[in-house]
Amino acid sequence: SGFENELRKGLEEYPVKPGEKFSYGTAGFRTLGDTLESVLFKVGILAALRSKSCGGKTIGVMITASHNPAEDNGVKLVDPRGEMLDTSWESHATDFANAPSLDAFIAILEDFIRSKQISLGTPAKVVYARDTRASGPKLVAALRKGFAAMGAVATDAEVTTTPILHYLVDTINTTTQEWNVNNLIEGYYLKLSNAFKRLLADRGTSAHLLIDCANGVGALAAKKLDDFLGESLTLKLKNTSVESTEKLNKDCGADYVKVGQKLPPSLTSELRPGQRGCSLDGDADRLIYYYLDDSGKFRMLDGDKITTLVASFIMRLVKDAGLDDAEEKIKVGVVQTAYANGSSTRYLSERLPVTCVPTGVKHLHHAAAERYDIGVYFEANGHGTVLFSSSAQHKVASHKPSTAAQATALGRLKDVINVINQTVGDALSDMLLVEVALYHMAYSVETWDKLYSDLPNRLVKVKVGDRNAFVTEDAERRLVRPPGLQAKIDELVRRTGGRSFVRPSGTEDVVRVYAEAKETEAAIDLALRVAGLVY
Ligand code: 16G
Ligand code: ZN
Image (tube, rainbow, N blue to C red):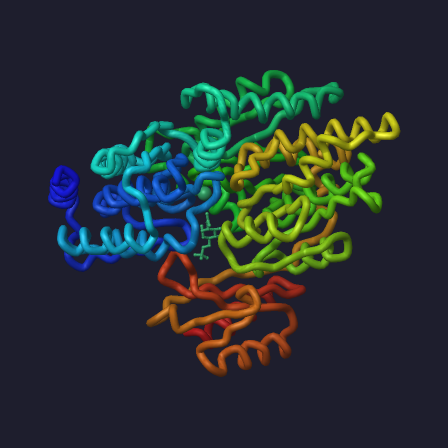
């Protein structure tokens, strides 16, 4: 048939090379960009099938490798509400990608369509985007051939951030208006910037913020946002060389700062003591803040610090709006992973409910949505957002304030909802939220930092024969396999004090060891000793 012909042509043009093995993991497919064309062709087909199986709703495809090196690339699918692809489809994505021949692929495809009861007559719609990587355009070309083979209607959102692509998917599926993608993207900037301006309307002086854009797509988005923000906040953009694609994430960006716990060298002459700055990652879904203290020492404010600030601010607004009394009570809670600094968990637990879940945005997102009316989640690495349940949004919209102060807080809460990108972590939206929270809490960056002090910590990675031999429980805080290893870790922790855990990476062929303790030396020592057990 015509379809089979398209498939044959696609698979001939984009063959799986001998020895190649792909896997749809925590971050979708991710590896060397030049090896991904065959995967992209099949992802085009899979996205179209996902759309059909969702009754013709629009599915998103994002081509990015986030904070990874410039030569890497990756791809992930976005479900109709702007969420990560349903987990039950992940293994099928892997099977598609690894199908070696036309016959094998057709067999997998037919089986899949039958088992998922996908009706091929349903139209398919997709929207796709890529970051600034050099391998992006040819991966887009392969993706489009996959769409074409399925007759999917595809919208090109061009070069944009991961969170904007998630926002687009959700908006396209909920809007009842005629739309074109440029207007929708403009709608995103207007939503964020208008709410931000209202929230800061009574701030007299205009503030400046230094932003390290990781030489990635965040530079383009931040530039655009700056135009929309006008006088309300002036963004000083650094590391904006998107044309020099090899500079992406090189010695800069949120991951560089978080892992190295240091300022990118390119910012040393830019950041003055007391001034705050922040770093985005390569696709602008992670955010890390920092400043230099009085003695010029670098101080980092990571995802845990952002959680603390944002959760405190939102709890205060809920209270001030009169939404925490018995009948209308809105429950605010926090979701973290095992990587959250122990001090942050302690600080937060004394103030509101805290849940720990396994690493990976989808786990945090689901827990935040399921457990709380307002769920604040951030990974320590700076990826996160705030979710408002529909009942919370309804209460905020319909609540009748009984005092002028309540009315003010309620208005702010409505604007805060608009500043936030609820589909996924969004560095630019989170940055506006942090700026708003600092202003309304009347915190300087130092006051924010001093809410609690981070325990010194170390993260090391260990190459092992088979990382699948490491199996965890209790939200990755304990090992059940290899047998006996957890008991040895417990013994080390008991002797040295602190906390340590071991988990297999979901994105690299390594096992990660995390340790924290009261003193830096002790944290390093514990990390190395536990790594010694793993090795
Ligand atoms: C991916 C995840 C991130 C997680 C990281 C852990 C998404 C969108 N991203 O980047 O949330 O922190 O993987 O990597 O889910 P690891 O498993 O290699 O430690
Ligand atoms: Zn990212």
